[in-house]
Length: 231
Image (cartoon, rainbow, N blue to C red; front, side, top):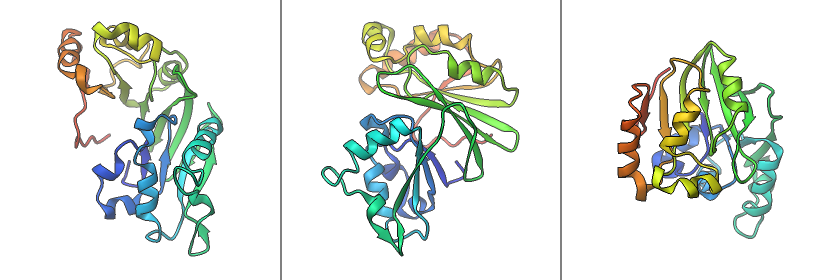
């Protein structure tokens, strides 16, 4: 967002040039599953020595604790919060309370818990009177959509839709959405805002595309790599 704030880091180092990576000032992390943090170690390494200020990892404390314990632990990857870059840490962790606004770059963010198998939040991000909602990984949930519906400035909703309806049982136990459960969730969304789908699992993508089209909702579209959206 504005080239300086990212949400999650599943494939950032594949999507951004080295110069673009060096512009990133903060990464908001929804949860610690590998597909959402896989490129985070490489992002930290790639920008080490190229930035005068630390790269900030922002999330509720339980999410940051998982990153410190299981990833940046000097076993799987160095603890860059203890490696100095021009006498400042290369990485800093900022724990944010859920449900309370916080500043990150030029944005105002709010972390809202969602229903997943590990501690996970979605984010509402606001910039000059316009906000977007990013679900994180979630099954059917309420708090995020309740907070979103309380606003009048939501211009875009980014929501996961992982599996086709034939894998509904898998989606239920892993706390993800299918087109069927997405349809039930949409009634909770702020009315009128475009709905952008992400997190589709590749093996089921052809069927999932067809089932999303069958919803017949013109607000709903499936994101593709390289899409650029302005709000």
